[in-house]
Amino acid sequence: MPKLFPYRLYLVTDEAACLGRDFFWVVEEAIKGGVDIVQLREKHLDNDAFFEKAMKLKRICRQYSIPLIINDNIDVAVAVDADGVHVGQSDLSISAVINRVGVQMPIGLSLERFEDLKAEGAEDAWYYGVSPIFSTPTKVDTVSEWGLEGLSSLRKLTDKKLVAIGNIKIENAAQIISSGADCLAVVSGICSATDPASAAAAFKSEIAKGLKNLI
Ligand code: TZP
Ligand code: MG
Image (cartoon, rainbow, N blue to C red; front, side, top):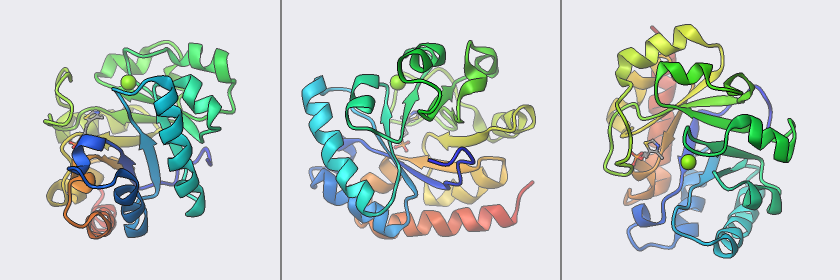
């Protein structure tokens, strides 16, 4: 994964959001539609099942040369030789992750508030997840929303790539990009779409519009 983080559309997976359809089919369709990077986020699997799922997903991602990031679980990330790991504020600290995997493993860090920029090791993250931009039924344990104003203020405080997440839909995608996000992370907007490939393509075209309108 290049340190430049050139990605624009980030699929964060959620089996429940796939609405009973085959998980791997949904992800592959999303990749065909234009997703640039995939994160496997699993909150209910034991390590063995998480590993199996990650291995299968890695095969699909490799086929399309798409990086695979593992949420939270360093053991699984190392075991499947993932392209990176993503941690939140209540997970392992960045320094602890680096102690485990070294500096060569890309790490993404979720920021929930401005103070998180000063958290130990935050400057070693490869990108920041801006979480959540808007509150969302997909993740209900969030503290507050960044909103578009919070996002543009954060944009002025860091040069790191900002990955916005939380209730991002095709309708608000361009505006979030023009408010300073480099990349959009989407769960339900793609996983629950009738046609995940067209949804991903629509997000990509809104992102292109947003980039033309940077404020
Ligand atoms: N972190 C902050 S919000 C969120 C995560 C994993 C869920 C985003 O889901 P959706 O369906 O794209 O709103
Ligand atoms: Mg987490």
